[in-house]
Amino acid sequence: MRNLIALLLLLSSLFCAVDAQTSAVPAGDGSAGNPYQIDSLPNLYWLSTTVSAWNSNFIQLADIDASSTSSWNYAQGWSPIGDTSTLFTGTYNGNGKHIAKLFINRPTTNIVGLFGEVSGTGSIKKLFLDSVNVAGQDGTGALWE
Image 1: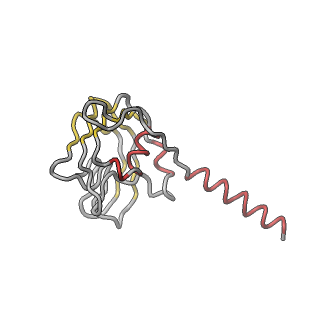
Image 2: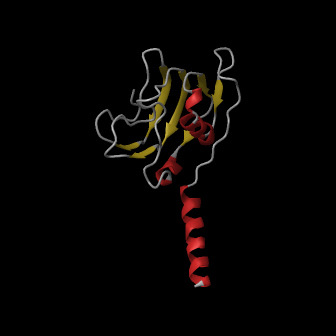
Image 3: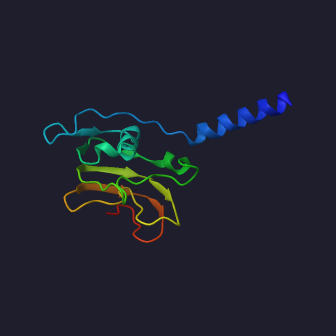
């Protein structure tokens, strides 16, 4: 019985490690004069999970490889920035940078993309997405708003 429990704990920890994401608070304070500086996937993940920052200003300072998102959220991948209950009302200046290999597999979910719901006051500009793999229901795209 002990061996079985040890094996289950080991398998559980391995599975969790594969699905783990790392969040890192970006530099900046989110104001227009000092936007949050997104320069890594952990910074971008912080943005997607920090709903209270969805009304702030962001600037991307480096190209980002998002290929590891294919193992996130039990293979559902990326969780969009902005949703029907809290719209993204901030600004995201991609600064001519790229996000590559973003993965989203949410075939029964509406409004899926790097961004989900963006209000009329929110804006996304100068951002390039390369080699993305996105599956969703209505309102789905690589950069949906």
